[in-house]
Length: 361
Ligand code: ACO
Figure 1 (cartoon, protein in one colour):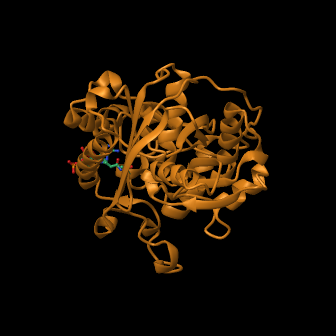
Figure 2 (tube, helix red, strand yellow; figure 1 turned 90 degrees about the horizontal axis):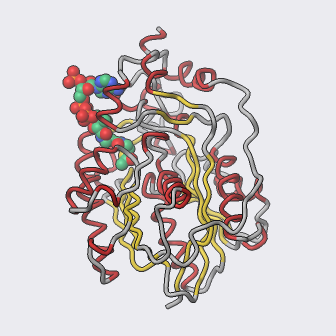
């Protein structure tokens, strides 16, 4: 079977920051509560659409792989807060990047979307259908945040990360994976009024934002991320001791710690950057991967374990043997336009729709 390698990586984080101290001015919370319960110190609020974050991350990943936009034959965008349903966000990203040779599609498995995308992309290449896959995880989650609900508005942020997948003859790349879904528990994390089920003009704006049973998600995320990791490792013929770095979905540092504890994995082998960005759903894993490489946390030959859990409820894990190259081949000069509003101004539409946060009322 042909090996499939990650040959390029990149991220695009919008510059506007919403810190815990900023949130203290809006809702009845504290930096201490958010830090100890979630590990988050700040998150980014995007002034552009998810497609624009995706395009910049995608161009950076392509440059890192030494590829051009013309080389991409499949563009997949993992997102649950994309620009529109029709056209897909992937179509919009194609237009922005001008990847005219690529088929383009969205993939929605919420926070597990990027790991799902890695599995789909790998098998597309292995099956011989495509040669060069650009997979982007992108989110503009702040659009769904109700700042009258302090239990959810503190958790999420915006951003994008991307990888290039290519067939390879090296003895490296994707070794094994495991994916799963429990649709019977979809209500545990949802946007209640959305899609064709949504009541147009619903009288309660709160129903149009993210709603979740926090402790239930917590419990299930720890169980499923650890179970799935062990299944994928077993398929790869590896043991936990073989893992050099776990890159988990960044939902909550306590979920990450509890997963590592349950697996019996040393905390030093776990990559965490949730303090800087919060939960960016499908973007957390590619952003964390990009930063792990930038930080020198991955060496040639390392076994990297990816694990994610999210809305749906979905989960997935993937075991990956890193190849010989841990540095980018090139650098893109793609940049976002500078923000035209400050963070609070960017949140104004949320306040107008969902209601003023308690401390502004
Ligand atoms: N600031 C201060 N107090 C708060 C806040 C806040 N922002 N939010 C809730 N509280 C209060 C509650 O009102 C409650 O007060 P009470 O005891 O007077 O009733 C108290 O804190 C404890 O609330 P819990 O919900 O029990 O707090 P918990 O320890 O479970 O932490 C949290 C809540 C952080 C949401 C946690 O359950 C969690 O992280 N769950 C996972 C959810 C998640 O990560 N979702 C992301 C999407 S899914 C995914 O990506 C995997």
